[in-house]
Length: 128
Image 1 (cartoon, rainbow, N blue to C red):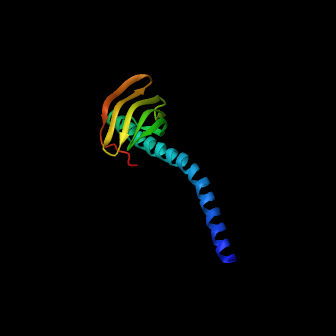
Image 2 (tube, one colour):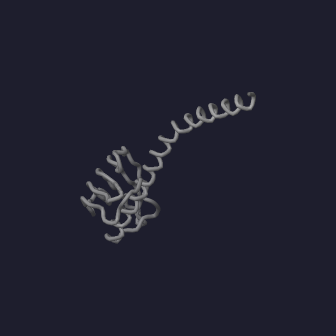
Image 3 (cartoon, one colour):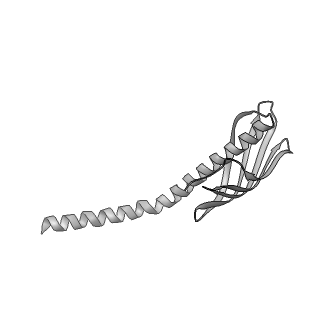
């Protein structure tokens, strides 16, 4: 009887601790997805800059404000960086990222002059 009670208490404790851990997992998962999305956007910005012959010192550093909508992420993001020649680089994204592609508006600026404005980001996907 004691063994049965011990197993039941251990199972209940495990379920309770699992529930507490899982409530934090959703936030960690969302942050992880935002990090993956930021990485995909950083790659897209780097490709646009490379096509324009611009090299960055570092980055870009993208921050996202995206919400999960089924199998996609929708919202906006901004990226900032500095070109090797000291010019300020900024990119703005507003759209949707998914495993089937990334669509929306991506604008890349160097010293506030637009160097790229695209509605479909080539070779971009975010799997969830």
